[in-house]
Length: 555
Image (cartoon, rainbow, N blue to C red; front, side, top):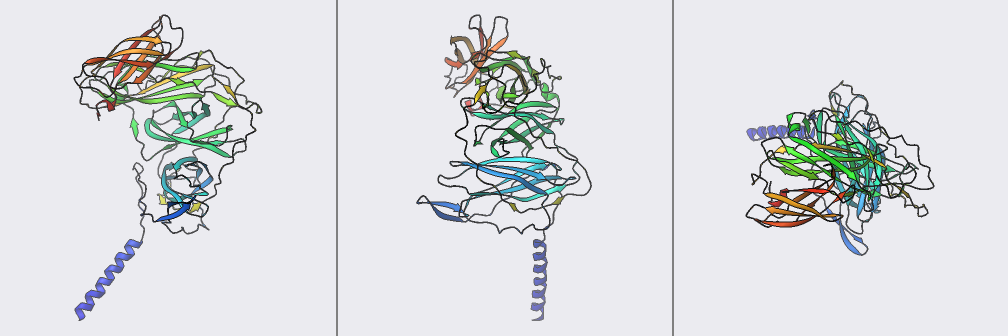
């Protein structure tokens, strides 16, 4: 009996120690280079409510309400919060501030809750901000979709956790300048220059745009991802407008984030893999942007996923258009022709009852920004075009940058958790009495091209089996190309590039097209849409065909 009691008491002591250990939360210093993942949420309990007489499933509460922060302020705070609902799509906009002057807030996790008028939870998600620099104010744009019939009454953005790092010597390397709103007949985009002051090329950079009206109210925005931001350089960026509740904006703010998915690439000889042998882009009298380049793989290896960044800016230096994409394959020592897809040149708008702001004069012909073989950035001289409508200068859209703050380094990092902030309200509707806007097209342009070489890869094919020839204009906007498939199997599709040259041998236009099936060991005629600057007479065409990754389901 004594032995039984003795071992029972000892077991109780061990259980007590284990219980105490599991109840304590010990915080370890996070690795500044580590990739963080979102916390896993426990299974939600469904609740059924009636929407317009139809039963719908929503999610019940999963967590207890956090303890109120009545005494100590959270180091990361919300300064603005608003949402816009358009049908089933809801877009959340927030301004977030790191109130600490000597520490970087790292891996800050936010939880998003959307509720209806009865408090039922319609949506829940988690997002993370990798870095909020000392005293920095950054912005968040986040869009989600609900089931039909759901109406959001309130959105909560809760700061769940994060790390204050007093030791990390790092400052914001990314800067946005000259943001603006550009429009075409079919879409609207926010554009800007994005400059990277670091000696590293960053990947997967997120951009968050927040637009304001003249009453300082948030009226829209959007978000996008830039795959590559070259080191010690600047590029044009564009963000699709995901929500805009008013036609006229006063200014737009764009906030770049280095994310948990970002990588930093050092400069090296890999930048010299792809050579730009010739290039040019033009805008014609119909306000169509086209052109291309001649590229060569200088290595003896297959290069996959070569990235291009094309920026069209106007006489005021504002980004009008940013075009990015990939060339999937460039075989060893292969010379290829590349052409961008045709795009309409955007315009800006201002309303007659507003006086356009004084804008800066366009600078003289810009100097080329090339510096060796780094990213091969090149700048084309500005040139005038025939504009269909030439109206007074547009209202300037001004950026409101926030300073990154100090970068002091005293103590070790600490974890900080905050409680919810909730103050958003739905946006007001657009004023139906607002007069029709006046469109303003640019008069002069500058074009920049940056080629980011891809990586050495492998494929089931050791060569490019396609040959393109006999390129000729069939009318003012189309070219016919003969494509030969030298394989004894059909290809699902091919990418056809066409460059248009004038009598002096200069590239003055082009176009591209993704064809349908290319039959084995035979020729297939492909029609490619093209645009060019100048008269149709005395023009010559060159064509090139290559494989996209999906042609053979290649890796």
